[in-house]
Image 1 (cartoon, rainbow, N blue to C red):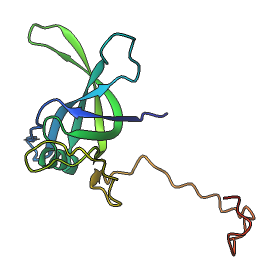
Image 2: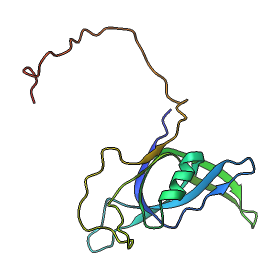
Image 3: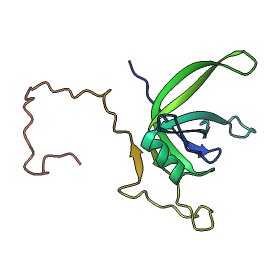
Length: 157
């Protein structure tokens, strides 16, 4: 089974850090993601996607991101059912964030984006969850007969 979601967009509000009764950090926020297709004569549409971040990821998001910040989120889609105040059954669809990263231009001191392109830094700050229990290392133990190249003369590029 595969459940991977990757989005990039802007935060619609400042994320707020909450703590569960057992002391675990959590935040939820909404990311506005522009649609790639625009009909002629119409404005570009956006989807508003709910995201939940836990523990160190939540701490990272609430510390470094604000309303309007560009953010990249990688995680999995999760659904849950609940009953609203009027007793109606509802379903929430949200991304549970595993990794979050900065993207876009840096903000200047006055809060406005700089008007020049900046190449991303080699070690761009991001946070990745340390829970890798869903990944398995596959080792076949086979030698596929590839010899290490001694020089680049035989390479086509």
